Amino acid sequence: MFLSYEKLRETFVFSGCYLDGIFIGGRRGSYESTFFIKKKRITTTQLRGNPRSAGIQTTKNDWGFFQLVNHGIPLELLERVKKVCSECYRVREAGFRASEPVRTLEALVQAEQRGEAVTPVDDMDWEDIFYIHDGNQWPSDPAAFKETMREYRAELRKLAERVMEAMDENLGLEKGAIQRAFSGDGRHEPFFGTKVSHYPPCPRPDLITGLRAHTDAGGVILLFQDDQVGGLEVLKDGEWTDVQPLAGAIVVNTGDQIEVLSNGRYRSAWHRELPMRDGNRCSIASFYNPANEATISPAVAGGEAYPKYVFGDYMDVYAKHKFQAKEPRFEAVKAPKSSPAA
Image 1: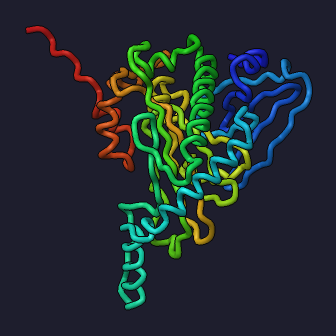
Image 2: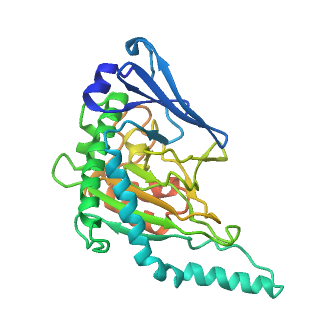
Image 3: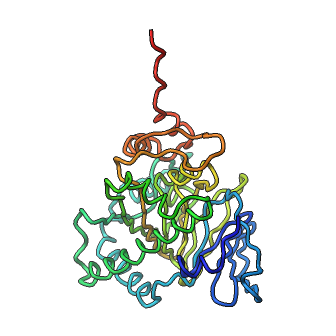
């Protein structure tokens, strides 16, 4: 199946499809691609000519990550988001310096200095985080935080919905199919939350992780990552690959629920954050997830390899097993088969 240039223009400012881990997108008069090979980012490539004859084919995607540019979100707004989130961290910094990860790392370093053998921490992360969504209290310092993040989240929500519509077409589904699944056919409101993270300079990145490896539980995740300080890696074929910072880009990754709905066509990818000695990395991830009441099951034919379950039940399992393999999570929420009649 081919994703037409006309459809790209109708549904997506900058959209496209997967081809062996390469994301290719369309815009007027050209196509662009940004892709990653063995820890080296290959720069954006322009493929000029008639876009209708480019012949871009949708295939199975095993990466689960791609970057969007020309996404329609004003760069001026992205700069304001960076500014207010950085200012917000300065308010929170003292709390991070007194946090358990910092105290634990300091204790390990002191033990090492005494000649004791130490083992890297594997049950906590070197990060400062807070969440915002429509139903919780947001920071009021700096004063511009609430207004800026409301504007940003509105743009990100629209972008997530356009991404899902592009996925609908790539998967051969009716327009709006993924959104209907997330809302229980319109009976419930999908969840849209934002996680604001900072990964401050770490004096011993060999002894602690920034964020442990995991897949995301939900649907479509849109990440506005620091364009100066790296650290995000994605696992592919047993090798960790850098998701290199790209100014003005939005990183998109697919969560476990998209993997189920697509029957494995779009995989949720293992990813992690590495702590860095230099630089305070900012990472702002927005999650478009199903409503807790929504029932999730494969919407694409092809073996029905995944179970049918209620998303809230899956989240209960995920909260306990986030940093473990996803396959046992799917198994844990599988509805039991009815017993044969006596």
